[in-house]
Length: 261
Image (tube, rainbow, N blue to C red):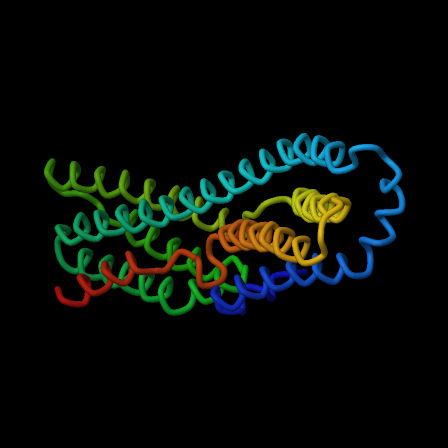
């Protein structure tokens, strides 16, 4: 339900996240803090007690944020590796089928160029919307049928054909992995815990007894960093969405090489 945030430029989204959390803290310090203070103002050494509880809570919450950030980065890196692996297998396959005798070699290369063009111009825009492209499967099946129709006539052609089939299987595996990661993201329940933890952190800081201007400054700094962390996780959560996403640069490089030949 929050995928619309990926339509916002990353700098604007980061500033918006920071402004949101700082605004929540400042408004709450003005309206909610006086109410919460009623529960702890009679406690001796109130700041010490709140500080101890906040320290314990921040250990668990900071660990959770760190683990989620690492998970989001690993998912992003794995998706990027899948794209690179697919492109590398596609380039190797293109070189292999180029050694086939005419007209098989030319036909197979044309099918691969068509597939690469489709990935760049049509599949990637769909992936940026969180939609798994399906027409690439039709193009891959057409290439497979053409590849399997070739009948080697010499031992050299048999070796070449076997290598092309191996590269094709590698290509299919990497392609499926890319498609699987189009909709991969952090589970919604983890986002609920992250947001709840941020609100609890802010509420506990409201309980400190200090000057109002100090509250605004220190609490604002803490809230700004919370907003930055949550922006970072959200930006990397969906590897193919938003400005912080995987581009089709490797496919574009390969396609330029295909066109030049």
